[in-house]
Every structure is written in structure tokens, then in C-alpha cells.
Length: 133
Image (tube, rainbow, N blue to C red; front, side, top):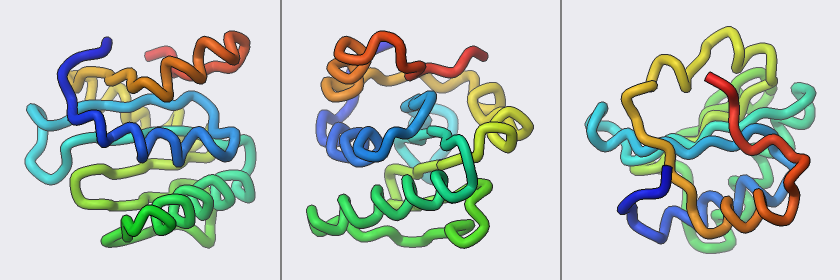
């Protein structure tokens, strides 16, 4: 699952790990689309948690001088899209994620396991970091 990818992606993964997001999946979409290099997909248990996760990601990346190009869905909290150009976050309310099944739609993309994601998985073996496809 881990393969050659720019290690700077880890700063984005650290941002999503900071707010108890569930089922974190990082997809390398470079070979299947031209508009991004990676998708980071995660879930929250409620629309409030989804909005909180997305807000935390935005705030955390701003502290590193990384600004989103576009943000959609923050107010509703069902599917928040944070577009950073080469990295796009999809933060879902879990039932909405199951319905749209982005992992299935982008099943040709390879999963990426960054250093921070591997560390989080090792430290929290009971927490689900992957979605079953």
C-alpha cells in the first residue's frame, strides 16, 4: 500500500489525524485524474463532527501557510470538500460516504500510507483507519 509519493503529503495527513476523523484513506490519484495528486477521505459520526474536522484541517494547514483554493459543504456537514490543488480532502458524514463510495469510484487509485498514518494505526489498533471496499 505504501509507494513512492512526495513525503510532504504527510503534513496534510497530520491535519486530518488531529480531530478524531474515522476511516482515513489516502489515495494516489495521479494516474487516474489530472486535477489532483491525492485524495484524503475520512468520516465523522455527525454533521457537526464533519464540520469540526474540516475546520480543524483548514486551521491547521493555515498555520503552515497552506491555504485552500476552495471549500464546499462546511455549513451542512454532510460532505465537506477542501481543495488544496494537488490535495483534495473529502470529509463525510459516514452514511453519505457509504452512499457515494468514492473509494469504489476511484478504485484504480493506489492507497498511500504516510509515516503519520502508519504511526497512528500502530498507536491505535482498535481505531478503524481504512474503509472496507
